[in-house]
Image (cartoon, rainbow, N blue to C red):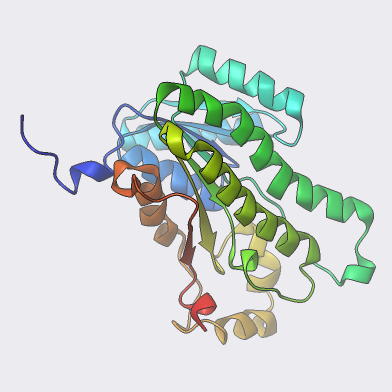
Length: 259
């Protein structure tokens, strides 16, 4: 038998992936990248038609098996239903990417309670609900990967981001807790922590020249991230190449948090 090469360790043939919020933005890029690496990919969001379109595009581009599901991953009953539906029609999940997220910006004293609840629910509660369903099932099979979508705001603060920064900081520590709980079961749990990327969520910044310039000024590389630049990091953490990496955060931020 030939020895496995380092490049082989990045391949994901035989693995099944579920990406929440996988129909657009960084989630869509990650879903496509994992399919390119050989995985079969399922995408889920609240809008089935968007997931179906993304799944069809990924299948056409990569030749991999894809699937689309609709669920509100902030609701435990919905996540339980999703898990049952996914396993019945797509198969057991080996790699969970908790990517779904929203942001509501504004000064803390101006934000409504509903703003706080919405951001915390999708960015922190939903990853917990999904991980607690899929993680133990991975552990029972002896192999698994959980990737949580953190942020530079997992470790720094910006004004006007109270709910989002709180959620992302909490998500980073949730990542560490789950990594410790599942370390002996072949399941790794890590966080991807991007800086500013040109996603739909960041349109308010992209469309404001003053705010855009202020962000660029804080990035040592002098530019925002391009969507494809998250792909390699996701493939690494999802693969056997990262078999001894757990409880970690990988920052993709052009040097912002190095300052």
